[in-house]
Image (tube, rainbow, N blue to C red; front, side, top):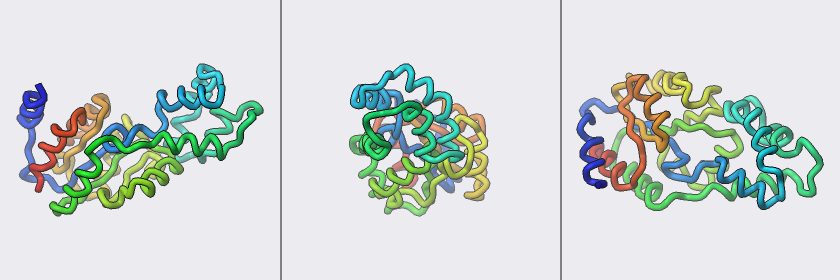
Length: 214
């Protein structure tokens, strides 16, 4: 079944004019930085009303991810809108601990990067503090030449402007790059921009495609 998926994805692949690779981070190399699963765990750990916290989170999270407020300001609204028996530092440490490396992909990709001459950029949604933590903790500079993170460019996927910004700064045309994301809606967004985009669902599948660039 996996072999069939790889062959199907390769059918429309044109690598002859590829000048850069764009990659998501959460769901491809690391767990998502602060997804609903992590928030449920936080609610259980700190004895919070998840539904209430989730409503507060949904109200403000997009503003945090595009860099308009800090993590402390996000937490003031999402968690500390009432008195708690724990402080922000304890909660932030818990948030950071939810970032874990996914099996195989990151270590392989760092070795792959050394074998080719193309630039590799991250295009990801993340608030600044989480983004900084993940880049530093997992040595992501060993893989990425730059980061088009939502907190830095002021827009977040699925807004197509994040891809237009990345293409403009990288000085490449849409058809001259590949993009991988674990969410199909974001793959489709990149495709509508004109980028050769693929869903990352299996290590071996993504590895097979990326190895064609060496």
